[in-house]
Length: 237
Ligand SMILES: [Zn+2]
Ligand SMILES: [Zn+2]
Image 1: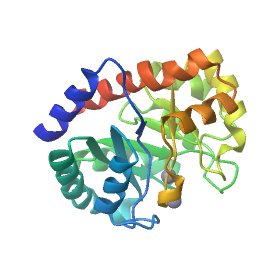
Image 2 (image 1 turned 180 degrees about the vertical axis):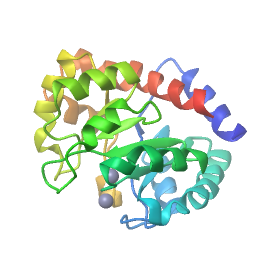
Image 3 (image 1 turned 45 degrees about the horizontal axis):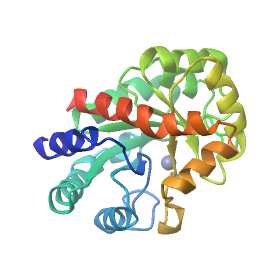
């Protein structure tokens, strides 16, 4: 754990934080790359903070210690922050809290919940339970997110994702509109499954601007919100 703490401290000590992305998939779920190759490519692309958050449910929580091994190697030997986590995906609403607790117990550092994107049959109520659970870090691609969910996210320190994933980004404008009114904390992630999904700082910023944020708000997402997110992760390690 020490290696992750040190890397977070180094990032937080910087005046300006570079590109970070805390939602991606390796071939331990449905991505195409071995975790260490994905981390190598993320590092070379200029990421300063990165997380592999493979899809999980009760069946495959055993990927957590596997991801930990490669993330530790990347963080230790390449000097950037490579975190591991999970994205609870299509988990029944009634089991989300329980599986989240199990994932945390097994050492997952970043907890993402696969939100109610309008492009997949996610069980209604997933957004709401995720927004109420303080162990959750990111509500990913939340689709037609409600005011109640956005307000809960603000209250419980759950970051609301603005995604560049092509299938899930069609509701970004709505997410910004509702999230902004609730003063929710946005985070911009790619949900990378293959190397071409990775974005640099300016490309990520364009996703935020295209979703309706102002230049000032977009900078705040990449600077202040990233710091707040890293501080939250740090407090759990
Ligand atoms: Zn996927
Ligand atoms: Zn994902």
